[in-house]
Length: 132
Ligand code: THU
Image 1 (cartoon, rainbow, N blue to C red):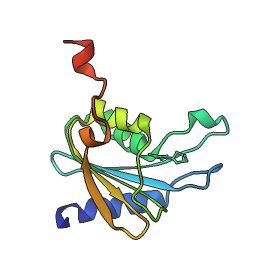
Image 2 (cartoon, protein in one colour):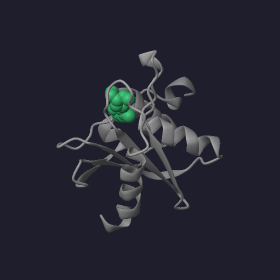
Image 3 (cartoon, helix red, strand yellow):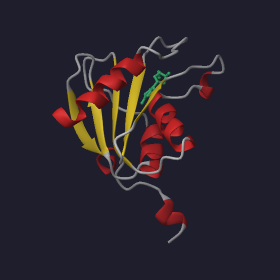
């Protein structure tokens, strides 16, 4: 999709900033706000492995911390032949903080498929369950 070309390029660029000290698996993400701003993120690993943060959550937390609340799409890329698949924790955070957006899964060649949040996390736990 031509409309997401810039977003995909931003995710690929963000991947080069990753700090995957232990896994050597580079991931980049780029999040598009409703008013067309882009926030990027990469994975950052810790020697205490579980403290590692994924690229998607880096991008989302950066945007939220700058006051952004409404999003249209997120592009995620890794050095994978197949389209990258976001982890379960990131699916939950996308669902909670971004809502029903386009999720672009980009492979190492820059090809991508588009999904929706609910397609990646059907029957999601969320705000509506806590506050019916
Ligand atoms: N990773 C991401 O950044 N996003 C995902 O959706 C999957 C996994 C990172 C976390 C860790 O730094 C590395 O990839 C290997 O799991």
